[in-house]
Amino acid sequence: MDQSKKVSKRRVPEKEIVTLAAQRLFKSPDGVVVLKKLSKMCNENEPTFVDQNPTGSAYREGQRSIILGIRKLLGKTFDKPVQEKATI
Image 1 (cartoon, rainbow, N blue to C red):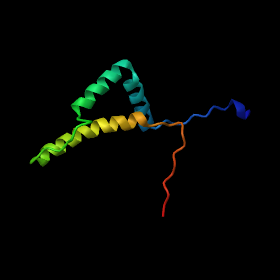
Image 2: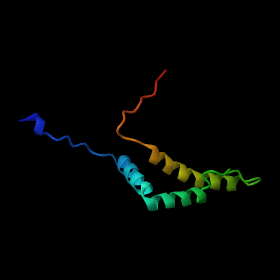
Image 3: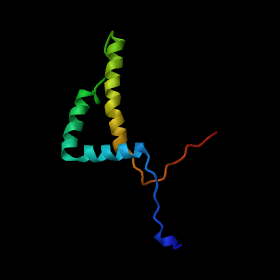
Image 4: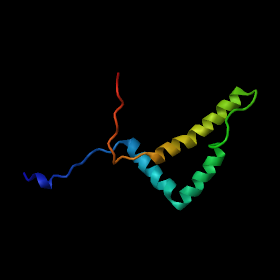
């Protein structure tokens, strides 16, 4: 069989599918508007500490973790090899 006619079919992990979908979504003009609103709603650039209220602080930090997770997805690339961490 001719090896040049073989097409490599790799199974795309769900994590990669979700990441690429989020990148397409939030890079669209509407997505940029929504991302700005989420940034404000989730206190991305604000302190999460609520004086004398640890539950309030935890709640605000939980909100902030959502927008940070989205930002992490938007920064991921799949075309570069991943650098393995050194083990000691």
